[in-house]
Image 1 (tube, rainbow, N blue to C red):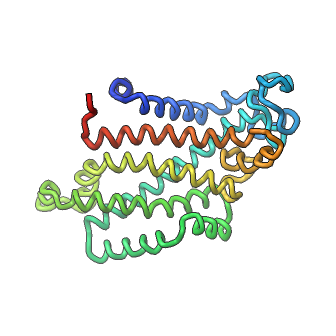
Image 2: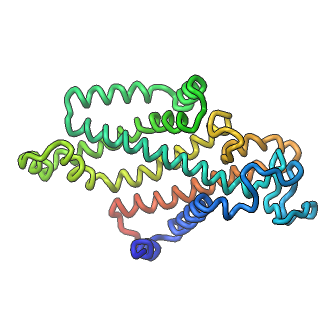
Image 3: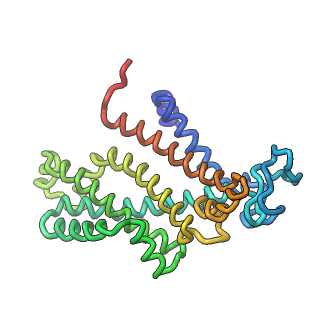
Length: 286
């Protein structure tokens, strides 16, 4: 609690705005069954009913705040459940990619030699494939279950995490306190856990926020193409695709989940930018 108050006291207005956006999305994700007036797949009215404040709005109890989607489901409820599904999958995927990428990056920097060469060449091969094409091919062959989706995206993203964690660990690994630990007889795991990790934490935390943004957008893009989270599971990317035909009739329904994706991405970037600025040690001008 004290850290949160300290953050709000020293953060600039853009970071506070970004944090507010993140908190709102997290609350919606955690409490979706209680916030949403209807069920995730419950059909409550006609197709593409207008928003509640429109003159053509159809009365409902509880009200259909943002209208209905292409099947007559409450769009606001779908947004709440979509926040839960999309954010949860993106968070698990980012955590898995960071766990694998950072561990391998630290190993490569600490052990050097053939271990570093092997891991770096495998990473180069994986990064040589265009990210979207690689994911589309693998998901088309292995299926589009949530588990496969998480593993495939985590594998792709772990290559980027490996690169930055290896580069950061290379700089730390030559420091005198690391050499002292080795001379004391400390093992490889101890050096990585107690010497390299604490000193690499700031850039890795900032990179975690950026990678989460990329993963979040990537999952939404795959869902838009039909290879992400599958119906009837609510997902912001698939909601844009399912309601895309409404644009032809002048109905703005698909822009609502698209706006939710953009808003969360901007909010995350505002907080990450502020964190990078503070971690760099650059002082703000008076």
